[in-house]
Image: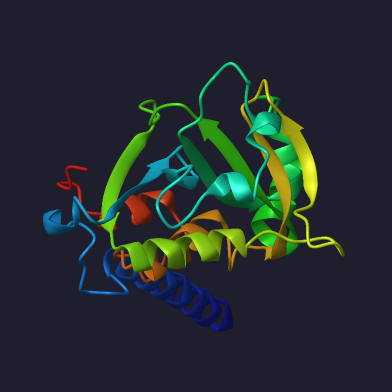
Length: 228
């Protein structure tokens, strides 16, 4: 009898968690979403969010009227000098995961376990693009100048700085077309890559889910009909 009670209690807890996650997946944090207001097309700024399968990145122009990433990064270090760079993609991740897999090598089981279940050092990945990447699921949003600057400050403040106030470079490879930098705070299942994306999107006025653990939950809530 005791075993049956424990089994039923455990099953009830698991089912309750699953139901809560499903509700959080489909329920938006901010019901009002103005990120696809076409009246902003001329005076707003287009941003992009793309999904690599398990990870989301925020893609933004290198330079706009009120923000220039060239003031914060040496683009010659993270991209081939023969290629003009028009966009930068930013994403948060587990530091070991990023550094051990950026070349396409297989991921050690221990690194995977730590990234999923333990607080670990985090990193910011910065990728340089000449054009908007089409190999991923990608959606766009048009946001106001104010919200855009709020988003840029959020991204910039995600980087950890050294005692001189400079971003801490972990690895930069122009052949890879990007670089990795130390990030503030730890990486964990409670604040993973997609949670970081959702936090930024919320600041930008873009609709985000209550539970943003999956990349698909981020993409689900972004307006599919926005023609940027």
